[in-house]
Length: 306
Length: 157
Image (cartoon, rainbow over all chains, first blue to last red; front, side, top):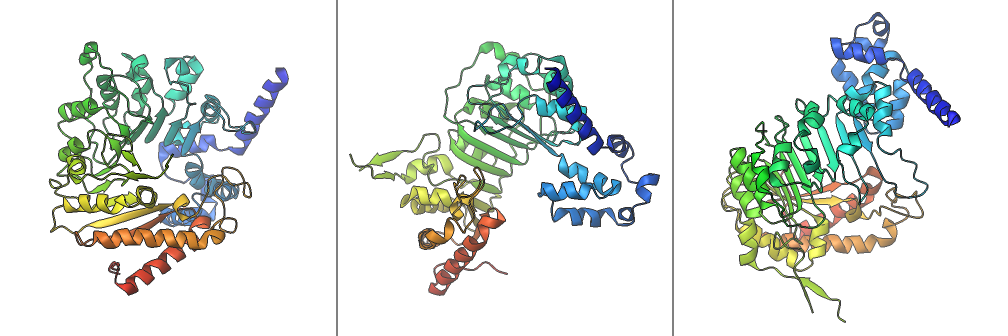
């Protein structure tokens, strides 16, 4: 056990050496521009930032090149590091026995220790088919502290979020995403329509919404949930993506509480309330994605054997 | 047991769900190549019904998305590394004719759609570089071949 701890400590130390300029990053966040005496000595500081970003755009998805670039000098490191750490995905299952993906909450804790969480803009929590994301996943104080340090998230994806299990204190767990969150993707979220609507209402700048179910399910509503009223009206003027979606009441509540829908793009597959959505967004909808295999909206493939 | 199956397109039922006659700002209708192939013969009826409900004066783009697997990629391949898309050397060239025929069948669907409404056809390859190259070339060749026949219209430059 001690050996394992020592190995972890060594790994962290190595990473701390690798990311030797955490203080510099924090300083960068405070000041917003390059200009320390260290940075000034590098030729990169003489280049316009637009040009630097243009250079980076050629290998922005090539992590190895980004890593190599970050090693050239402090200034290049500062320019590259936001692109290296903009996305964090945590897993809780592995596909193969040889798959050595770190499981929840290790990636989160490790990024916290390295001071990288403020750089992360896209955060995804992937769970196994039988897992549910409940408050117990954040029960550990240290995990909750790490989770709360994600203060710059613009895109959030959570599998099997049990919204009902977080009520009524859900704001304490997710409220820190409110100022920055633009895109919310929920796979198999559970909870009443009002609870899910309340959760969506936590994010006053939300533009894009994705709700993904694998099979259509009946709604299970409770009259007690009528007390949950969204605390804000997100603009929701971007893309709506719905898959196997039968919760018509949720969309009706969204229209009622948010004063209508204003999505400009829609991606609908096996959606019960397609007509309702198309009519609600008749004035704003610019792009619609449909699928010829989805001939009747709410029903699974209507097929005839011959 | 006969495994042959067909999708049903009931125009009345379809338009009950996807009636776009009230849409005032719709400019783009998207679908996937995979969905067109899966729906087989009914893809044309489906898309024609949807098109017929869109108010005619507005210009409309039809975007067909070709993803990796539509362009010949397999997510898992024993030759390449597991979980990595297979390179063309291992898969695509052996099935060159198969994919060319797939594209021709899709173009037939688009040709029939022009009978309902004028639109601009945009074929969009959403794929990794290593997967996309040759397949896009075949797709372009098939479209040019179809243009010569007068089946599809080229978008303006």
